[in-house]
Length: 222
Image 1 (tube, rainbow, N blue to C red):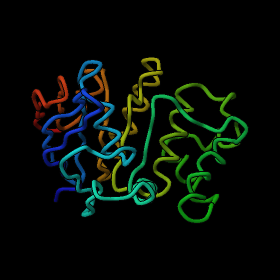
Image 2: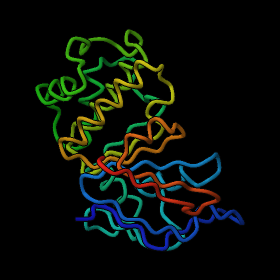
Image 3: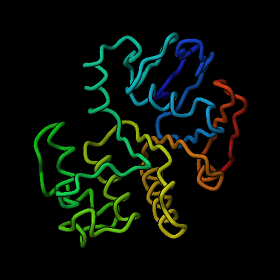
């Protein structure tokens, strides 16, 4: 079953054609990587999939909803309910603990629940750091708080933008191992990355060049 379908997607900024004729489907439970050089359209594509921008043309279906027709308010609701966003920059509230940063995401969705937030931190191995502020956490630990925050509302799609870009090799592997476990549990994951080693763990890699899909790499056994 397809969770995401992009049909003839284009995005134009003035005279700049950021995306042209993008056609892509993502199966439920698939792990997809999106790669490409700077200016290839990776960020634009992520913003459209993540309901942070609308295409200039074409259609995007996410979990049965045509998000390309939604209003700004509608996109906010879909992003809140269906997408777990993980960024290269951690975007944690510096005066809140790790637990409270996770609970903030609950507040925008339903009601804060400390037990559920602790369970999300447990999934990323951070229960012993729950009461620590971001300044008391390493970069890898902060990124794991971000992953827990993204998971708290059980999103249909986990969308990660350069999730290992600010991490050292050891913490990068910890984050990738978390993604592997989430994928094994059935999560649908899209990772935007410049790192071939990160993309290597995905089932499929889409390579963008000049706003178009240049090639798709399938990996058997993933």
